[in-house]
Image 1 (cartoon, rainbow, N blue to C red):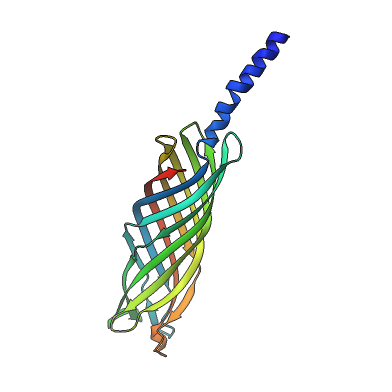
Image 2: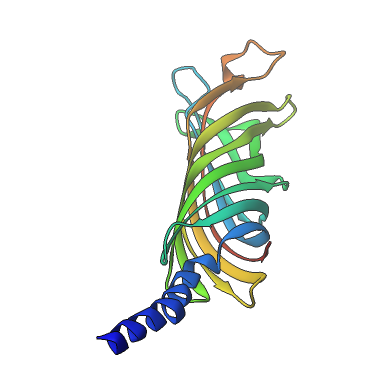
Length: 221
């Protein structure tokens, strides 16, 4: 019996900390940078007059995301983290045209952008082993959606939405990691018009969205 107790105690000392370390390996403050492919769209239901319509916008670009966050080990396997991210680049969303009864009007083209994308996310994770974890992302995202009509002032409005994502993180050593993730952002609809215009043709109802495939590196402190 005494020998059994000694063996159990040794297992508690040498095995349990190693198992618990799987999640603890990812614990701490972190800073990261990522890039890849981001496809941005703006759904338009504007130009508020019978017969008029606005073509939707859609285009893909390369983002540059900077993030800071913290990860906490909940137990030997599960983690819970938070992340603040910012993309300083102006993301083009393509070009379109105002149409009347399905025909594009001359001189009524426009293009769109999303910029100042910032998000705050809660990130639950699961440590598969000492160096690799998977995670989900659920958060709030904000961006400035802008339409640039030909020969007219730009039309802008800030849109807020929900950010969803899934990803994986791999530790190269105890302080440096790489990661890959896929995210989807759905913004609420916003209505905007040119400040110096009362023309209904210069009013747009915008609903942005985007999806991203990203890879990046980070440092754990």
